Image 1 (tube, rainbow, N blue to C red):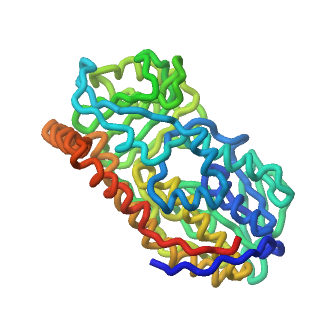
Image 2 (cartoon, one colour):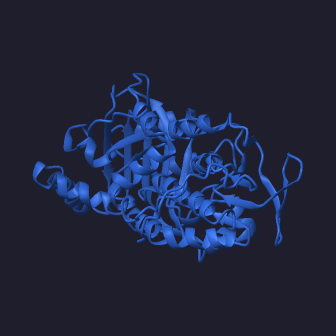
Length: 412
C-alpha cells in the first residue's frame, strides 16, 4: 500500500522521451493515452493489421477502477458503450434453469466488450501529434544500451527509442526477446478456453446460458442485443498441455481438438460445433498465468498480460489499465529516469497484480467442475450468493482484489 502524493500540473514533463509500445490491444493504448498527456513521443507497434473487434466482455469493479477510468477521461464513454448484460443462467441438458446469476454477480459495476474498450482508447490517441501506430508490423530485434534502444522491425525502418514497453499479451514477443523463452514464465492451470461467434438461434437478448458436464462447459451469451449473433465460450479440463500450431491462420488443429473434446456433450453443443466449422475468428488458448522475477530489464519493461497475465478470471484487463496509470505516473514523477520509475512501478503494482492472479485460478473449476457432485455444490453456492441476504457480501468479496492498491495522485 502507498500514500498519495500531491498532484501538480506538468503537461510536458516527458516531452524528451521516445517510447515504443509493443501491442495495441488494451495495455498498449492505455499507456499511450497516459504518456501522451505528459508529452512523451509514443509509437505503438501491433502485429495485427488493424484493431481486433469484439472479444470477451470485461468488467470494472470498485473505486480504484472507477478513479483510473475517470482520470483517463473515458469513464462516460465506457458507460455509453457498456453491454447492459442481464442475467446468466446455468441450465440442464433440456435448457431448464438450474440457477440464475444476476448481472451484478458476473458483470461488475460496468461491463464492456474488449474490442469496444480498445477502440475507445485508440480513438483518443490516434489523432494526437505525439502518438503513432504501426499496424501489421512487429519488433524484429532489440539492442539495449545505456543511452537508448536500437530497434529493427519486420517492415518499418530501424529506429531508436529511450524506452520499450512490452504490452503484447500472454505470449509476448517482447518478453521472449529480452527476458527469455515463454516456458520459463508460463504456468498452466489445467484448462483450455475457446471463444467464437455463433448464430443467435436461442434468441438471447443480453443474457447468457451455461451448460456443463464434468470437466467440460459450453456457454452462449448475447452482449449487444444483436438478434442474429451471439458468442460461444467453451472451457474444458486437460491434464496436460496440448500441442497445436498456434500460428495457423485456419486453426485446423484447434478446431479438431474442440470437436474431439466436445463430442457427445449435451444441450446445444452440436449447434455450437457446427458454427465452429465456419468461424474464421476463433480464440483458443490455455488458461495460464505469467510469473516473472522482475518486470523490467534495462530500458525494457513489461505491462499487462506480458508481465502478470492470466488468460481469464484474473481481472487482467482492468489490472493492465491500473498498471498503465501507475507506470506513466512514475515516469512523470521521475521525469523519464527509467531506473527510478521502473523500480517504483514494480513496487506499486506487485502485490496488486499478484492478488488479481490469485483469483484467476478459480475460473476453470467454476466453468467446468470435475465431477457431478462439484457441479451441484457450485450451483448451491452461487444460488446462496445470488440471494439478497448474501449479495452485498459477495460484491465486497469480488471487489477485494480490484481495490487492493492505494493510488497516488500523480502529476497531470
